[in-house]
Image (cartoon, rainbow, N blue to C red; front, side, top):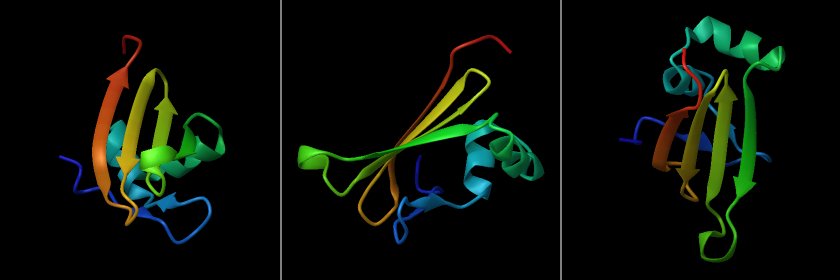
Length: 88
């Protein structure tokens, strides 16, 4: 389910390949970077705490859609969820 998404854990904050948000948000790849620069796609990075230390949570928001990834220390996605909170 989540094996196609990989986070680069080498930087601070960790980064995701530009083609992954496009797949997760159902957007054309050429629009993702433009929408992020315009503030229409936002993201939140959350380091794991306690027993989840070393893992990360990464959430993308775009027009009522929320995509959340939970990633292991090596950057591979452990879980992925996608929720739409408003009608298209």
